[in-house]
Length: 285
Image (tube, rainbow, N blue to C red; front, side, top):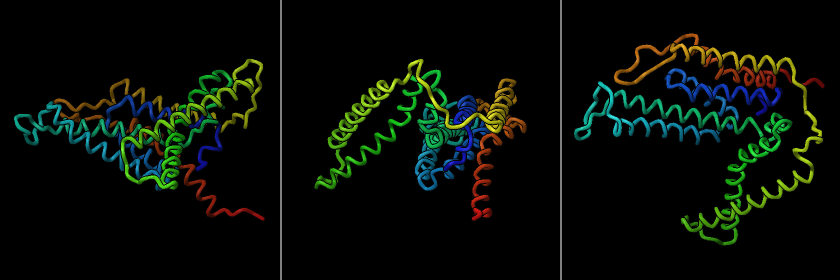
């Protein structure tokens, strides 16, 4: 979807980095729920049914981490039951769920980052000052999806030539080695092509697709401002939340949670606006 395509590539990159930075540096369950909700809605709007597999995987991660953490960690005062001689505590259970939510939130937002920020966007933002670094980052982001697509193509080709449909470790290893060889050759071709075209030289000229507008400044200021409010409250301890030895009685700050929730769901404004214009404002002949 092209909800961010009207902005400069710096805008979606700044927004996603602001959201993920807060998700990494906090264990507050309210902020984690905001990140999960906003990321899930955004991912469903971008990938639709393809996002259900990732969301199901995130639910499994949260459930597994929540169930297994009290088996290894026996801290906490609220004992639910005993496994042998070791207590299974409520605090350890909720702490495991919190860690699972943090990992799931990062997976969801990284998936959204990979879908929104393309390789061309990275080259447009960092290509002038750090051309080699921008090229490496863009190639890394595109490596895993292209490797997966090539693996599927080779697998289908093997089926089409009469190969067996049985899954085996040896066959997977052979296909994986073939994929790596293909990617290594492609990377060398790309590097030689970019070098022959003068990529990274000081005298090389570059063309911008569009200029930086006031709307881009406003969007970046909006994202950075809400992120700064959240980090300021985290630094003051108003968003602190602890699980041991008892659950924290606080941790909910209306300003901090509201700011982060607004930051996470802000793309919904553009989604609703675009769909409304598309549905109720037909093009004039």
